[in-house]
Length: 194
Image (tube, rainbow, N blue to C red):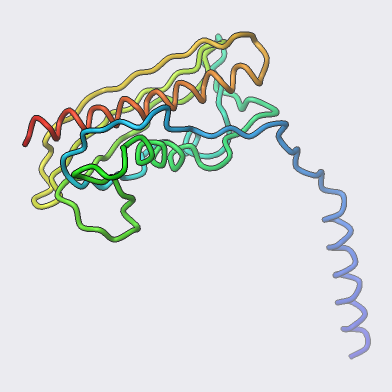
């Protein structure tokens, strides 16, 4: 019995020794978030805004850069402050003016709405010093799940310099512009349906 306890104690000591030699993860120098650039008025109906679908590479916290050879790399020293797709969703919701005839809400609130805004984030990366965002945005009828309208949104923003900070700001601005364009698409499409 004491041999068994000794072996367990030795195993625990060895396991803790292995953990202590693992390198500490690098903390980013700065975190960035996608923001609503303005509050747009004119939402005529309640609207559920879904989180964009996206490949895992661009839906997390890492900022991605595409090299000249087409290879994708993580930009060191900068990150999103949370998953990029969730931040774009929140920026879209925050881009609608509150107190209008219609309200933009998150699905988890549980409100029933006649329409939904769904999207697919296709591109969110840097190419050189250019931040790029591309989304396919769809307006869907909640009642019968029919597609009412669909559009492609593209935003590009040049960085002021080649520094990681300025490149991250360019990517943030491109993502914020995509959110604003998605908001305007929803307002325009719903007003044409009324």
